[in-house]
Length: 101
Image (cartoon, rainbow, N blue to C red; front, side, top):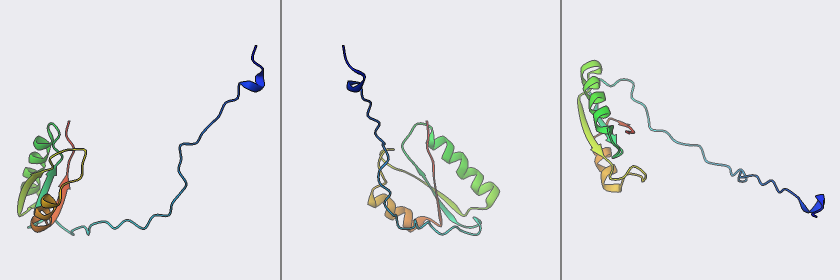
């Protein structure tokens, strides 16, 4: 027979120690979309192209966006590669990204 003392339960916290983080810098937001060149960046998931193409159409029709460029990452689970980000920086007055499925 096992004594009550031998039936200890250990409770572990999954939280890490808090480490101070530098403030996050966000991209500057445009005041309006009219005339801007917008990049729509897909994540290579199913149907993201359908959603982003409709969004692109509406941005042009409803908000007067100057142009829409559709780009796509190679893999959803990884950041965009440097070459793709260079294209985004060169073409974009604004960038929108989307998730499919």
